Structure formats: C-alpha cells, structure tokens
Amino acid sequence: MNAGRLLFGSVLAALGVLFLLDSAGRLDAAQVVADWWPAAIIALGGFHAISGRGVRGGALALIGIGAGLLGVTTGVFGSNAWNYVWPVALVLVGVWLILGWGRRLGSRPADDAEIDGIAVLGSALHATRSKEFRRASLTAVLGGVTLDLNEALPVTAGAEISVTAILGSVVILVPRGWVTEIRGLPLMGGWDDTTDRAAAGAGAPRLEIQALVALGGLEVKHATRWRAR
Image (cartoon, rainbow, N blue to C red; front, side, top):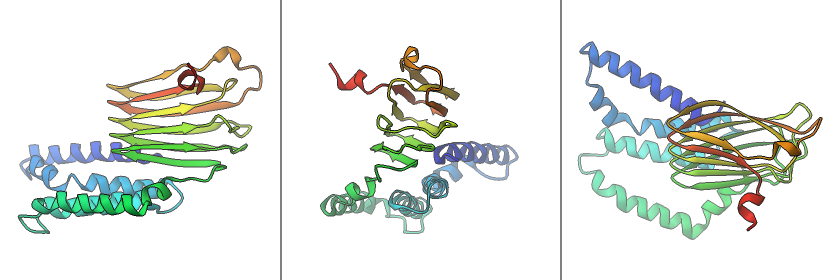
C-alpha cells in the first residue's frame, strides 16, 4: 500500500472524527489539530516503513522530525521550545551535509524489481535496470519524485506503480513501446500521459499506474522529451 495514500486517507478520517466531536461539544478540533499535526509526519514515516521493505533512513528521519515537532507543539519540551527549533534544525542539516548522509540514504540498487520512493520538501530520483520489474510506490509531499524505467522491463503480467502526489509532483520515464494506463483520483490536481501509443505493438510491456493526486501533478513520458533539444 502506498504510504502517501495511507496518510491522506488517515488524515481525512481523523479530521472527520475530530470535527464530529467538535460539533458534539466534546473537544476543540482546532486546538487538537494545532497541537497534534506533527503526528501526520510520524504516521508518514511509519507508513513508509510498513509499505517498503523495512525501516530505512528516510522513514526514521520523518519519525524523528515528527516526534521532535510533536514535543514542541504539545508543550512537552517547555513553553520556549519554538525558540530552539530553527537553530537545532540548522545544526542537523549542517551535520547531514557534512557527513554526506543524504547521498548515501538516497542511493538505491540499480536492479531493484520493487522500488519505494518518497520525497518530502525535496526531490528524489530512482532508476532501475531490472528485467523483472514488478512494482513501485512513489510518494511526493511538497516535493518531487522521478522514476526512470528506460533500462527496465516489466514482468510478463505487467508492472504496477502506486503514486501519491500531495502538493508535489511525480514523473515516470518509460521507454517507447510500453503500454501505460493511469487510473485514480485527481483532487485539484491532474496527470498527463504523453507516451507514444503508436509505438506499442502486440504483446508490448504493460504498466498500470494507480494515482492519487491532490494539488499536485503526475507525468508519464519518454525521456527524450526533456533530454533532447
């Protein structure tokens, strides 16, 4: 299951419950949201770990950031905690850059048959040369994810990609001759498939994309459209 889709559905359901309780006079929904919104970041990290193949650096980073912010918003770290958030954030980013952790955590084997990609407030590029490519889960939240399949081949039954773009964008690069199909739900967002369908013959490799796009975009195209001039 796609981490972004799990997050989006969970947040909508939680907001619905909160506003129902607010209407019944049980709590102040606005105050609860103000105090507990970082829980969504923790949930995204947890969902990414569950939907992927174990807990990785990106999921741990999201969980850690969310937990830290939650301690600030709920007052666990004291009333002056916000005064220390930005200095601490600058220190952590500086250490991250000096040690090169971002580069190492962003690397992926070049022959993965399954890919789990996520970008939050940033960008990520994933590529595979697998000749038995099966699936991918791509999530972009206030960021962008690119998946390059130009050197890959899907399994005989066809490959599947689950996409969630929330205030972000996802780009999928496929070689000519593939048959692509997009299904899903655009919420004040959209997608664009500019692949050359005329180049796909009988028995062509198939790629099915399930998309949830909210205030974002999804583009499926051939790499030559942006690499060549």
